[in-house]
Image 1: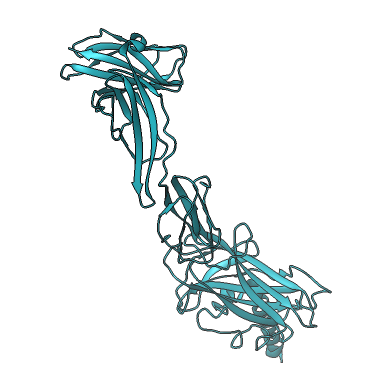
Image 2: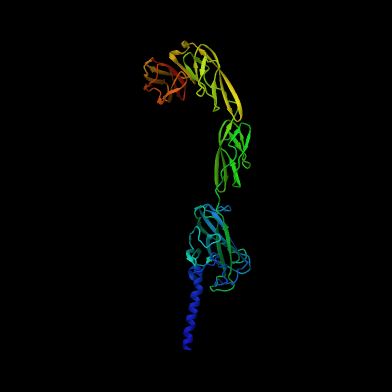
Length: 447
């Protein structure tokens, strides 16, 4: 009898320690994965209180970004998320507390994927062969939403941080088990559990935009992207517009427009060029003196300059430099030819005698109180330039020959003398200075 009395307290102590230890989580206590990731589908073979899963305890796993938004399109490699395990008591049994386990493996394997992190009230470990990484409760957790002491409507919610695996890992699968308990301190059939899983695909990158990347003003071109769904947009609506759901681009004005397609996996961009067969209006001075030049311009790119009246004036085919030859009137034409057709604009330039150009200076746009001082003139190719102005401005200077070919380019500032040397044959050259106030031209003779 004496031995019996000694044995019974020892057995009771063993049972108390064993049952109490389950509050620490079955992974830590028994080195056991009950999520199903290792192949064990439920707690039926172990000390999970009830023998079979209970349909009255519902459970789900959801993926949220760190801002709290639900993610349904899949994970992006290396991104931080929260895996939420949510259970609900739908039965009449009072279950005010709960415990759980959570794991993530590559779909169809037992290879752990990503990084789970333990938070307060939980711990993390590697349990059972082949070594499943699990986060589980470290003590009995109180219900998140308690209804009637733990009755129907009581909810059990646990968010666990998870960093997704590297890009190109592929689909992963999260496993979880949740045990809603009556908290009576013993292992009995009144504690009801359930388990579930969630397949999480890897979000694919947004595909390249395809389609015709040129369009005429007033015409349309349709772009597409293999990644769906998504939204089309452009910040360059003065050049082109795009249908947000259709990808139809409409040309508005000549130029280039950036077109973007945004899907959950990212944004792809492309550039659409808008062409026109009608050049813009020609801009520039309408008077030039014999032996001097002006520069005409057109906002429509890619065109060419011509004139049939080369005995009166010549035109640089790509530069727009118009040089006076003899007194008279010349018609200058700017033409374009592209996929939208062929178009022209004309402009009339009057060529005056050299005496019409004071000191050999001709301001060709936005005239202000500005003067080019170029000395000596004539010279041997060595001279000094000073652009005198009421304002201190940056000046971009170009020296060209009679054919409009560029001889030298440099940047200086107004009201600053600069010494220049050019090694060119004797002849007439033109120095063109461009500032924020206008364009100024001076003729120079090299002997």
